[in-house]
Amino acid sequence: MATVNHYSLGGERYQRHFEIAADEPVELLGEGTAPNPVELLMAALNACLSVGFAANAAAMGIKIHNLEIETDGALDLRGFLGLDPNVNPGLDEVSYMVRIETDATQERVEELHKTVTKTSVNFANFTKAIRMNATLEVSKA
Image 1 (tube, rainbow, N blue to C red):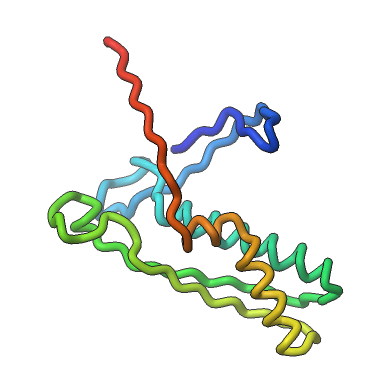
Image 2: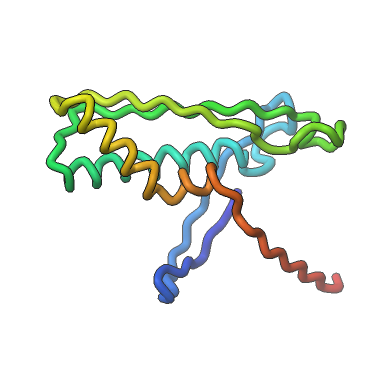
């Protein structure tokens, strides 16, 4: 279970409490153990792309009748569990398929796709390195 109590956007702090829950496979750690990071990342990517397609299509005057996004990635549990130092603990590659039903031309849909991938926050998170600034706080029990 991951809990969010607030977020910051444009320098403003917004109080908003919500929880995100997902389970690891029962075969791995049982039930109710922890958020599955791969599922959360894929869900965030798909949600971001969906909004990007809807908003940019509307701005371009393209009517979308149906939109499906399928995302796939391979994860080797040997890396996640620290069993093999030569195996990446995360994803090495992510593939996605977008299926759009529209009356727009192929060229217009390709332009839409290019715009969405250029401006999608979570797509950029997947395709570009992100600097991670870590802080560790330890309290006496």
